[in-house]
Length: 331
Image (cartoon, rainbow, N blue to C red; front, side, top):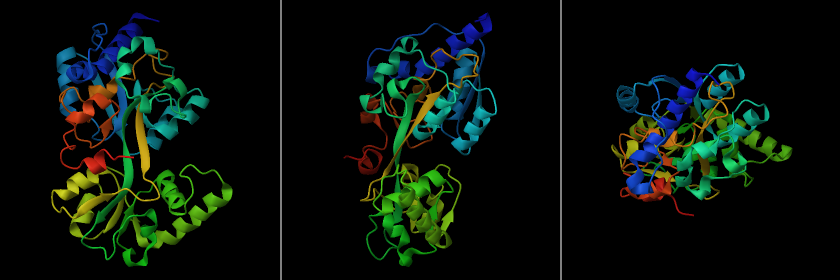
C-alpha cells in the first residue's frame, strides 16, 4: 500500500471517529485515531443527509476535501458501484447490502481500527443482512408508516389496508420504489414484508395494480409529502418522521400512524466499495457521527429526522420531548 493510500486511510478513519469524539460526553470516552494528512474523500449519500456547513467546517479545520455526491435513490449508487465508479464511502440500506457482498463489491471492515463501534446499540449489530458487521456499519434508522390528515378522513386510519379504502381514492401519495410499495401491499394482506412466496407476491402485485389509479407516486426526498398534506390535496401518504415534523408546523392534525399490520423498519449503513483505494481498511463505523459533529448534543444527522444507532444519544434527541411516539416508537 503506497503513501497516498495510507494517508487517505488515516484521513478516513479520522473522519469516521470525529462525531463520536464530539459525543464522548454522552457516549463515554472515544479513541483518537492518527491525525490525517491533507487528502480527499469521495462520499455518496442521500441529498441533504449531512448539512453542507458540517462538511465545510471539517474541510477548513482538517484540510481534507470531501467530495459529497448525493443520490436520489440508493439503486442509483448501486448501479454506479457495479459499473466500477470509485467511491470511498457509500450509504446503503440494509437489504441492499447482501447482493453486493455476494458479488464481491464491498470491502471488509477492520473493526480493530474502529474502536468506537462499541457505542452502536446491540440492536443494530450482527443482523442477518451483514453477520458480524463484516461489510457495513449501522448509521441511522427509522420507520416508514402512514402520515395522515386526521381532520380530513371520515374514520380513523390505522392500517396499511386503509390505502385501499375507496373514500380516500385520488388523495393518496406513495413512492415509486417497488421494494417499499410491494412490501406495503404484502403487509396489507397479512403476509411478511420479506415474503418470497410466489403466490403471496403475486397477490400483492395485483393489489398494487388495483391501487395504481388512485395514488400519486412522487420521488422520495425529505418531507416530500408535507406540502400536499398541508394543502389537503393528500389525506394519506406513505411517509416518515420528517413528513410529520414539517407538516405539523402548519397543521397539528397531520399525524404519524404506525399501521396495525406493522410498520416498515429501515436502516442505513456506511459501506466501503471494494474498488476504493482504502479497501480492507476501516472507515465506516463512525462516519455516522461525522454528520453530527457540529451538533454534539443531537443524535440525528443535521437536516434529517432520522435516528442514530447510538442509544446513549437518544435522550438528547431534539424531537423526543415533542413527539416521542413517532420518532422513538415503543414495541
